[in-house]
Image (tube, rainbow, N blue to C red):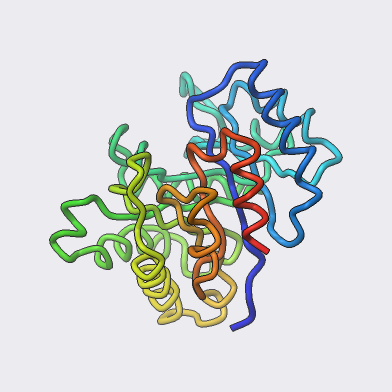
Length: 252
């Protein structure tokens, strides 16, 4: 299988001020020229998307959102549609992050609807999947990931994965400092690709699968060297320009 271009996406979560966002982007712009191969994306809080869009204009940094509504428009207080995100040059949209699945009760079906809504708006969804600690201990990691993937595949067909990214994020490794070993991560990534390949080998071969469990400047190179790890969805480490750029450079 030909190597896929690594995608390194920073998920800033609910962090930052206008001042700190400007400082962070300035630091990223100053160093992104040293990133040779990886695609670099920042997923800013929605209220800062306009500012960040202006700041990254003309640079190699692309813009992503942390969520998107499953509805196109209407009486949905507090929601943000794909079309609205498009207005600010957003190219990627995270859907199904564990903090929304488990913290906000989002179902597999709702996440699948958001996936489709993102694509309908011309965005590339980053579909987050992954198991809780108790699910790993019960040995059902693969079943959980397959179920979350199948919510999209069964609703919209395996071809819908063509214009998307999958992010495997073991929930027990997010923000905890714990990280799946490179071998553990590779095992799940290989399973995800094989699961898609059972329906369409071509789609599976072209699918970028990111790792999203506490990847940082210290472990990124070893994780990104694994055959089926095609990038990272970075949380805390994306809030420090130097750390995030180190991860981006590790992507090739």
